[in-house]
Image (cartoon, rainbow, N blue to C red; front, side):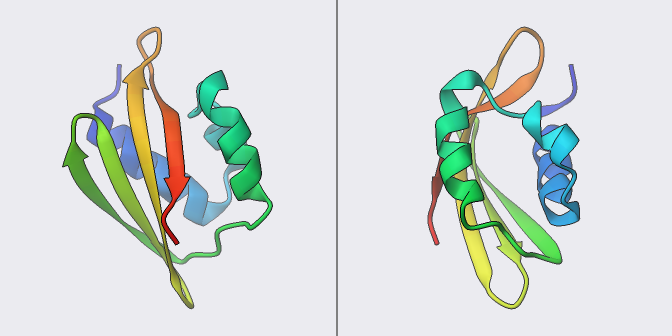
Length: 90
């Protein structure tokens, strides 16, 4: 299994790059409804910053013309790190 920090950084880069195929595997079914709500207002960014909050929680700042922060809770789901909960912090 990939390291959690590596997985979070890869996930953030996939968001910046628009790599939807990789992103879909990053979410548990529990998180998908929240992901779909976020998709109504897509993230437009050219870079990112990952802030580890401990307890498998992270705040990722997506930086473009403006900055948008997303909080997420990651879990080990069958040997793979996935987002189980998330929230748009603006």
